[in-house]
Image (cartoon, rainbow, N blue to C red; front, side, top):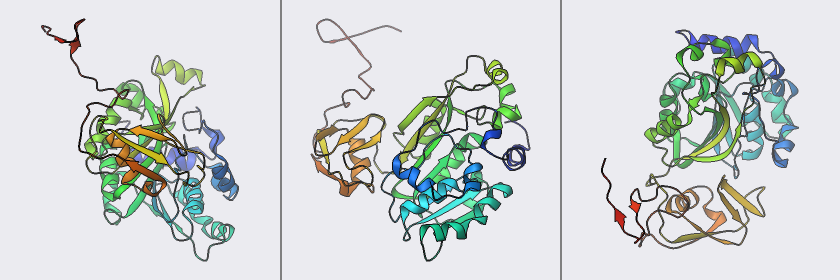
Length: 353
């Protein structure tokens, strides 16, 4: 942990030391991918002051949001909340949680501006002051959100496991946590974790990717899926010298709250056909970085992917084929192969340890 006052230091860094995105000392808290057309259109309706104080590292707005109830963890100045508010429509609702007074002041200052800009009779956005490590103390009902988003914030908290545990409890069944953050290829040494600038710049609080996978699974999010990942170039010689060989990446994950997901991709002989009906995805739909569904083409899928489509808001956009009657082993190409050596005759060979 960086210090006993980590929360105060993060509040000070994002509330006082940073006044706009250009004040960042590295590119870790910068979005590296150009937004799709519909997000760009939504961004044009967001107030300039809100945009100027954006410190995210990815795109945290998935597809098919109409009517959803969304929670944004570490909502900052409210940029992603105001984008999502347009996509959920007047019948949907977005709640942002942040602990920094200066950021909340910006977000709240423009509630009426955005309501008028969106043409809504009443605002469908609200902001709550709170530490996302204490989501269980903010008065939210269990299973009250369809979607939880977060943009480059998990790395700033100390008890990352608790954040994921609480998020899981707040999601409805079939809901998901869709978020971007910074991850490392190894665990950061204590001296770098104690560096205030490295922590505030979303670097030294970054989880080692394998630790994150274990945290997610411990919380109940079996089979985390990568949507997008990109290496981060720090572009600051002093900080690069401190980090040495440690590499960091901006990664967007989606974590589904679905009963019965398995630890590996198991093959039951199932298939799906995408109908082309998801908003802004008329020709094809990407579930994650290795599940691409062209409209009208039958695609074989593992049992987990089948459930991620059948048991979620995407169900009406697909046709489903197959049952759970026959298990064919690990789905080809998804890892988890039989951990035994096969000899030239095609039989398993024993080995001593």
